[in-house]
Amino acid sequence: DVQLLESGGGLVQPGGSLRLSCIASGFTFSSSVMGWVRQAPGKGLEWVSIISADGRSPYYADSVKGRFTFSRDNSKDTLYLQMNSLRAEDTAVYYCAKEQPGSGWSFHYWGQGTLVTVSS
Amino acid sequence: EIMLTQSPGTLSLSPGERATLSCRASQSVSNNYLTWYQQKPGQAPRLLIYGASSRASGIPDRFSGSGSGTDFTLTISRLEPEDFAVYYCQHYDGARLTFGAGTRVEIK
Image 1 (cartoon, rainbow over the protein chains, first blue to last red):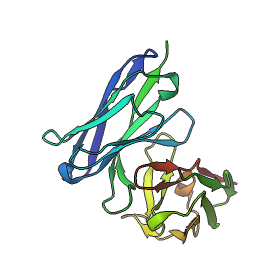
Image 2 (spheres, each protein chain N blue to C red):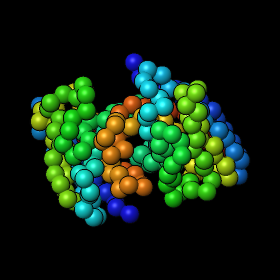
Image 3 (cartoon, each protein chain N blue to C red):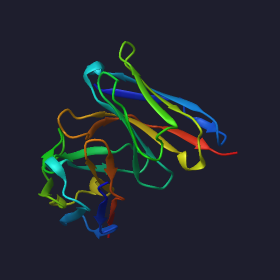
């Protein structure tokens, strides 16, 4: 079974940093396009970033560009989202997700999410 | 940047009724890269439809997607109790992924 397990969320002060991880299992991770999507409390879904299978071509939403860095370690089946200069508006549940191949960045499998709270 | 407008914001229906949800794009969607998700409270989203009309694996055939260009529709032919949830459409344009604001389907 495909499993995605996020970790690393928590409470951080504005301007601080946090690194999220997502450990994958049950599929060929090194061949899969992966992404992060977030959801602020009571709000809708917001795409954060997506990364190619080889990790060389991450794309970012304008709201996080220059502050967040998405990377992957295919030897460890793990994704990383380094979040710097955090703002109150970054408060959200962060989901990692696996793309459905050939679907145009549709995410078929999702983790259960990790909550990031940015507050003083 | 393509914007997605979902309507209505809330749909109040009874079990057994037909639900029709709309997603309108501000520009024509290339390759019909239009996706629909279902999300229930406290859960991660669930992929329903991709490529505008292809059902994801394990999705019941009461869910169907249609449309092209700028107008897309998710239809639930007969609502089951477990279908009451929030539905999002999503588009990919080659370098950016956009979600609509969602349609809540609630029990009337």
